[in-house]
Length: 283
Image (cartoon, rainbow, N blue to C red):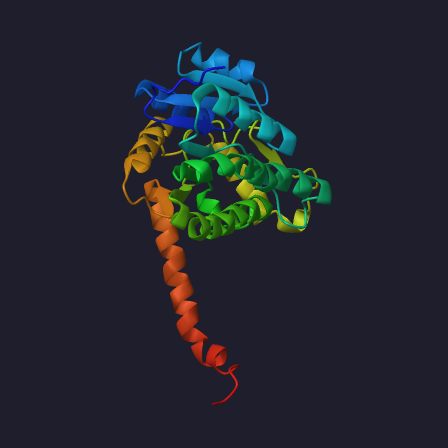
C-alpha cells in the first residue's frame, strides 16, 4: 500500500469510538489531519464518525501487545508516519481499596497501565526513526490527587504520571515530546456503567467515605463542568506548541484541586521538616 502523505499530522488515538476520544478524533479530522482511530470494535468508530479520507478505523484491544503492534503497522502502512499518539483508552473503578478484589485491580491495570505501555512501545520505534512525535497520555485529576472511593483507579493514573515523567526525560533528546493530560470532570459518559465500574464488594464501614463517593458520582453524571469539545480544541493547541508542557491540567476544577494539594504538601513539609532532616548521616 502506498502511504497517504498529504496530511499535516497523523494522529493515533485509542478509545476513539466515544467520549473524549471521539471528540479529539473529530477535531483533528476537522482541521485536515489524519487519524488512526482505534477501538475494540472499529465499526463503532465508523458508526460515530462516518467514512472519511483521513480516517482509518482499526480494531485494537490495548491489553494485547500483538494487537498494538499490528495497529501501528497498519497506521504506518496507510499514512507513512505517526506524529501524535493519544493514549486515551481506559475506564474507571469506584470503591474503597479494601472493597476492590484482586481480579478487579488486575483488570483495570491491564487496560489503564499495561494497555498504555503496549501501544506506546509499539509506536515509539516509528517516532524514533522520524526523530519527531508527541505522546499524549490521558491521565486524570485523580492521577495527581485522589481521595476515598477512587483509590485503585487513581493508582492506575498515578502510574501513568510516573511513566510519562520518565518518557519525557528519555524521549526529549530524540525530538519526541511527552505530555500527560490531567482533566477534571468533563461531561462525557465516563461516570456511566459503560465506562466506570463499581467494586462488587460493599463493606458497610466505608459507607461514609467510599460509599458517599459512589452516590455522589452517580448524581454528578452528565452534570460535570468540562466541555469535551473544548478539551479537544485544547489538544489541538497543545500539539501545535513549540515547547509543550510535560503536564497539562484541563478544567478549573483540576486547577483548584491541584493547587489545594500543593498547599497541603507544602504545609506538611514544613511541619515535619525537622524529622525529615534528622535521618541524614551527621557530617
